[in-house]
Amino acid sequence: MEPFACLLAVVLALLRAGAALDGDAGAGAGGQTRYARVFSFGDSLTDTGNALRVTAGGPASRPPYGETFFRRPTGRASDGRLAVDFIVEALGLPHPTPYLSGKTPADFRRGVNFAVGGASALGLEFFESRGLKTFVPVSLGNQTSWFKTVLQSLGPVSTGQSTATSLFVVGEIGINDYFIALVGNRTVGEAKTFVPHIIGAIRSVVTEVITAGATTVVVPGMIPLGCEPQLLALYQGAVAGGGYDPVSGCITQLNGLAELHNRGLRRMLAGLRRRHPGAAIVYADLYRAVTDIIVSPRKYGFRDRPLAACCGGGGGAYNFDITAFCGAAGAMACADPSEHVSWDGVHFTEAANRRIACAALEGSHAGGVDDDGAPPTPSSSSWSTEAGRRRIGCV
Ligand SMILES: *[C@@H]1O[C@H](CO)[C@@H](O)[C@H](O)[C@H]1NC(C)=O
Ligand SMILES: *[C@@H]1O[C@H](CO)[C@@H](O)[C@H](O)[C@H]1NC(C)=O
Image (cartoon, rainbow, N blue to C red):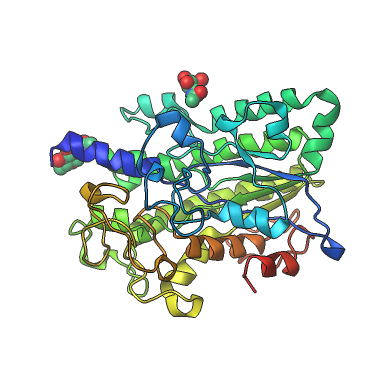
């Protein structure tokens, strides 16, 4: 394929990259939920319909996306529900309206999803100044200004009350920033220099929502990038012998980038907890959730070879070929997506998203403690309950 066509295909694929958000929240005693709505920010792991309105088309607008649950493409980059969908279900909350589909303030009272497939944490200028191109013209900066617009539309009196009774989910975000560098042929070392900038952008959003009255903010971390079928296929042959983790089969260097991101994120969140002791700031460990499945797929109901995508073409260990991306003519989905972790080589199946949501619902909340590097502590706050986790099939 011509380099440009190849890059275009990669970009299309990445438009759907995204995120998972997870968060959670919870029902208090008696099954009464503590929250009235969810506001979420992120990329394609969390987008429930915004990218369709920014770019029109793209794989997630076509079958077999959505086949498992919605039975039609909804713009979600999966065969079914995303982690954020499971989280709102666990909390007994309505599904937040994709921001770009909302028309009146009434549409936003039930919560808003600002996540856009392909979105980066950092703005256009950051990439342009490095000779790189973004996938879509949407960053966390856009999502934050959309949030402010929504708050204004809700009116000054109800604003503080709405934010205090809402659960905020900020992330996963940043995966596209790294992808932009990697598909632009930059080294992993250069991608690593983005980490503090991305963490700073996430910090700005979390600070913004807390300033607006948020009392619970869930911040999902980076997924194990080195276990993504698309990146495994991209680097095939280019990773030296010792470059793969012997247990997971994932690319060590890329997982190192994700771990660096997560260490920076946790350190930053610990600082915010000290600064805002009244807010519950919860880290959701997506990295561990996904690697646990990849290392022990059968334990979680997945089949062996968890690094092969369900939908697409290419065969081989990863079943990924950018020219036969899921949703393209001739690309096929596997018979049973629930046995697969990766849906299309970039995004997770509904089955994996359920496990990711379950892990997020158990996210740590170590108020005031610097938990950098420490394992997540069990949730001590009441933002997630066993009843909620049972409702979505975690326990
Ligand atoms: C996001 O913000 C940038 C910079 O302000 C702007 O150029 C771009 O059009 C915005 N994107 C959307 C989809 O509104
Ligand atoms: C990346 O490098 C490869 C091999 O040198 C080249 O074929 C490809 O065009 C480059 N891609 C970009 C986006 O620069």
